[in-house]
Length: 240
Image 1 (cartoon, rainbow, N blue to C red):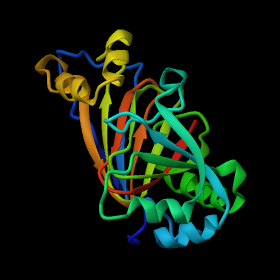
Image 2 (image 1 turned 45 degrees about the vertical axis):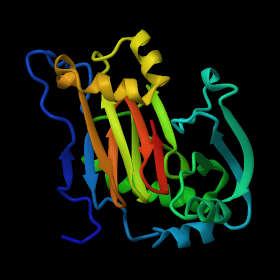
Image 3 (image 1 turned 120 degrees about the vertical axis):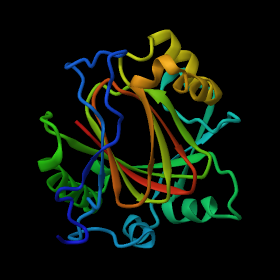
Image 4 (image 1 turned 90 degrees about the vertical axis):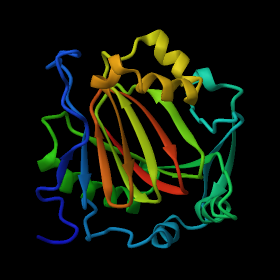
């Protein structure tokens, strides 16, 4: 098997749902993939990706919160600042002395044909190993600093989070494991999230997974997820 082939590399990322939760067939189960980055058209290193992005400046979001959480949703208005920055400069800033750097930079793939072609090659590589799902479309590449977080939220469609550089920690909650009110409260506090996912009665619907370069997390629609960067990170987000 080729080193970078996704063939037979799907791993279940969630513990089996037990009788306490009563598995709901309406909801698909997340899965973790390894070695899915294809060689053809793939940036061979973070520097190769930065070279591809060039000197153009992209939207860059910084957290005003102590927990580093960043969201472009309306409830975070006044909690996030925005500027523009070149990707190479962002990556340098994120690596200064291993510091806490609660910023994220977004490159929309629709604005970058070369990067979009790379994303399309990933879709081709992953599709045979995904559950039946509507057609997925690429979305964006995110560069993120240590300590930045995308707080707990749900997406309307299926998604794949592909880790290209650095390490991220993802925590996922089954759609039936958390109420809308609890989700809003947890979104405001990482400490509440840690407490919530360790409750014995919630164990059936909560799990965590560490993403390293070459791994990818399939997140079915409706699953709540919170993603934090433990090192400077580059990720590709694919959405249905």
